[in-house]
Amino acid sequence: MVAELASSDEFSNLVRQMNSIAENVMGRHYFGFSPTDAWRPSVNLYETATHFLICLDLAGMTQRDIDVQVQNDAVVVRGRRQSPVPPDGTRPSAVHLMEIDHGSFCRSVDIPANVDPAGISATYKEGMLWVILPKTGPEMTNDE
Image 1 (cartoon, rainbow, N blue to C red):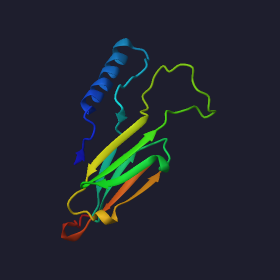
Image 2: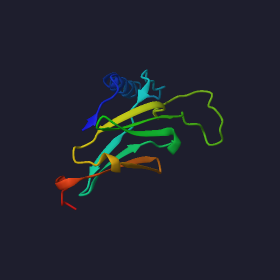
Image 3: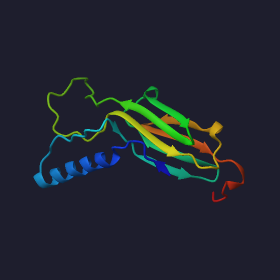
């Protein structure tokens, strides 16, 4: 159900796997590097009797840095996460390991047929973006 947007996803996953193998083989920390322009936040998709819930892990962002739109029967979430900065605001002089993704991102999740697009809403709380997709009509299940 999750639609893939970035054509470089396979390459990005390959780079992550290669970085992991290098770390295990070398037995030391190294600078993780991903040459892609966009990263992909992790997504969970839940279903209840009355709605679907999409949860995106967007830790370290503010609500104003996140754009949620309904486009062509999909929920599309875009934004840009800044590189983490230590609490005192100083910039490090060297990076020895970099696993926290930053920069531009985009994720798309297809909207099921029994969802009311006009009722879709989103909430950002404690680093998680929750998109609520209310169900419509007789397709609603009674499993809750």
